[in-house]
Image 1: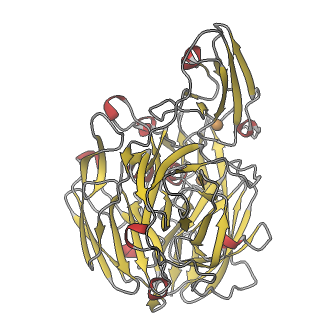
Image 2: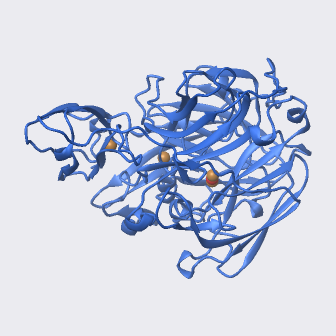
Image 3: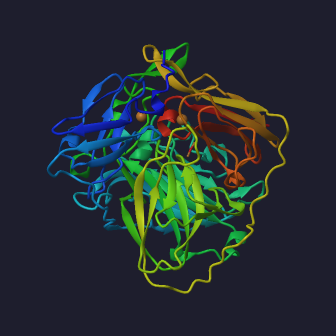
Length: 567
Ligand code: C2O
Ligand code: CU
Ligand code: CU
């Protein structure tokens, strides 16, 4: 049985003291793997200590032996709601936290804006860490993130992907996350693949029910069944911006003051090599025609997180800015980690949109929580900050939820230089896209959980079943508007993504959603026990679409279902 204890909520000894020449070791009695990760960083930006403690094992933390006297907060990278404090009490010096340097400039991915885009998927060296060799990645066009595609809404766009990756990568499939298009162009997990050496052209009309799509912040990424986590980890990710006329009329910051930021965590080995967490991928077993997983990294111990949190593929970068207003497009492209974005100067982030369009009005937020695949369109104002440095960081989520927490880490630095003219405007109302009139009755409930035992195999499931690409889990008639209910009955938070449409959020736990969830969405946070109701109109296309958890290991290990839109 998978133990339904609550050890994933806290350490049993959250306050630990090491005195004199004492050492520290950690025993994990839980069924979940955990880490003990220092929040304080060394000068190179890495945690002072960071060890993974597999369930049922005991591990020493040698780095603690060399720490200077002091108090060190720590947390679990897999379950950041677990936090504790280590007090080191000894005479003599030792390693102490150091300020982080933000040495590297931020890279803005190159922009492609034509109607026909061609991208070669190939292995390439990428500058991620500030010194040492480049890191080999699988890329779109030689960079990670791949080029940012920017297009006007309603203008047909075709993107040809050429699979020139190494042989072991196998076939690929590319999903334009958030966009509305035909199932043949959706990056299906097992159909319409791009075999190695071949190319495939995806067609995106950038329309919805015959009208141009709202201004959106989409992203494109691999979606291959069983290998989505690996292929994204290795670098097959890029951003895609759609702008509509209403957005362009608003006088929001543009050009160099409109900055897409893709945040993702990775770990590295010797010589800056990308770590390979998939070397210990669980084995697949079948029971009653269904797929389960066994092995040390079988569910629920399959959350891939990295030691380094990167922005646009760089570790701790900086961006020189003027003391003006900026538009930041925040994307969390991590496999499992969630972030609560906040600024070090205490100024709020003004959220004006989701990934799928503008909100009805701007919302000032102390922190913005984004799980895997979620996006936020925000304004920040550096007026009056001349000569200072403002850090964008991820802080502990402060909404009081018992769900899986957020990473605690600096992300990047804005170096505010001189003043400059700024004719951008902060509107009080926004031209938000129209929302569907929701039916009262729920047509479909999708329940997200964990099934099985470590002995017989386990899987993440939807409605009790692991993914089967040949099984149609639900059929929706074309042209109808439906209300769906999403429920999480597992012990950890999931981030659920639905293909095909752009959705209105109706209820979160029986209440009206918060102001920042009143636009269009495609990915929702579901904390343990939560219920979210959403609605969309199924229009334009028939065929298979996916609903899945966007924690990519969960998706690869069963937490995906197929629904077909039918005539
Ligand atoms: Cu971003 Cu189905 O994926
Ligand atoms: Cu943990
Ligand atoms: Cu999940």
